[in-house]
Length: 318
Image 1 (cartoon, helix red, strand yellow):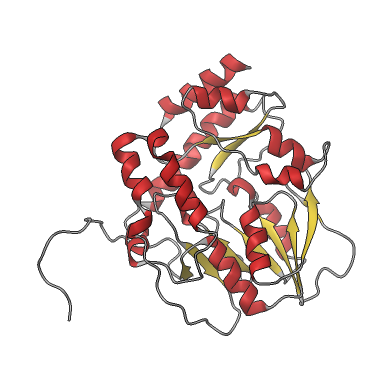
Image 2 (cartoon, one colour):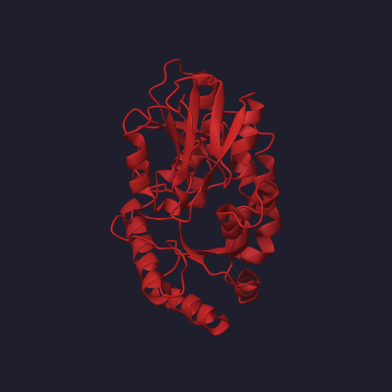
């Protein structure tokens, strides 16, 4: 029977999920493992410039890996050979959510694409292509993943439970980002051992409460503000005609100490991904991106005044 009465839970307005037609899973990594189990590819082609969690997902499902390079336009430099072989998958990352043109171009050449939209939540899937999303890179949820696939053979999965993994989200509200960072790291590390499950009811409720139109608009406005102020410093050539709620503003300046300087000034930026340096040599595009690319925050928590603080701090360093 439905429970009636008792103490109150979090009150979240149910607007609807952005990816309401997708398969709901407990992480982007689980979405990858789901596809690997369903497709059973003989190998997967991965970019060198990618998070270790993707590599781990392939290894957990015993899928052989082959790597390829990208250039500074984030275009894949795929190896020669029969890449349309249905027994393999080619994974392409829509880096920072600003490479939809590359996704479209690849989709016209390959049916065996797996699109990693973990950094491109607002990008719609291309019909008939396996596509994954990781909402926790865009919103305050502890877990969750979305998957679009036409592959037959749905997997019977139990629902995950999320309330035990939300401590960093709640503590950040009370104490700030720095004080809750250790809890955040523990939650990140926990994904290594969490099995593939359905998305929890808590995560679904939170993702149903978001004003996605507003989020998308704010992200695009902040991105354009930073681009206008920093494009002459940025070594990346960024096309802004097709912005679609990007994750961050990627700033590439080959100048040591910039990330540390920003963090000292409480502008928290990540490194994507330190482990890449173990896979590539100096002089490669991937090495340069790992060393010097600064992903500037543009998300829905911030506005023009915050973006101006970022610009002023950056120009002061430069």
